Image (cartoon, rainbow, N blue to C red):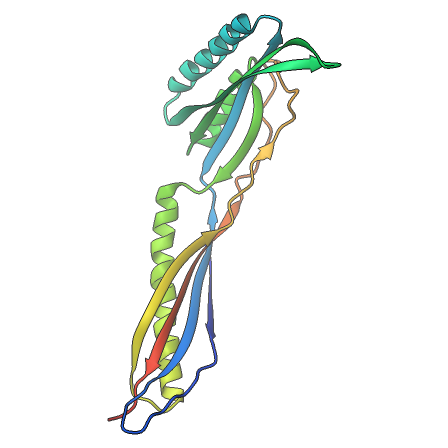
Length: 227
């Protein structure tokens, strides 16, 4: 895991009033980031049928999706979710020539090898719409907590440094905001005509890779005047 820290301070303004104590406000920003290995594989597959009888097409698509869901539930550690369902007309030269029925499912697992084997089976009847890696919520939360502590610690050190550089003994924290951001992998979209692949066809090779998780802390401090 690679870590990096960034710190920044904005210009400050002084204000003074006779007989009234005022404080100098300074805006500070710190951040901590880490390159985190993706640990979750996500795949979206779909069934699509075209013809003249929408009811028969719907039955066929439903059967394919039901079989795929049942197959996925037999594999331990794989989450399955049905997604969109759509029936749309097909026109040629402004004439209705048929119907298209489409439905998709989403598969997700921490066990990429297990999910890859399942994809090999399902691609005999379904098409692969997209496939991608991401970070699991548990891993994201764990890394986020560690980075938050680092970013806050960096903020405090910079606040102490700025305070001493301006000859002050202490400061007061006025406000602080903590935000997280990352750069998720974009799904790798497959060609729409990948229906009915041979049973022996392998799922596309895809490296898990990594993505950057970043925590940013912004805040305002007041340099306190000696009384």
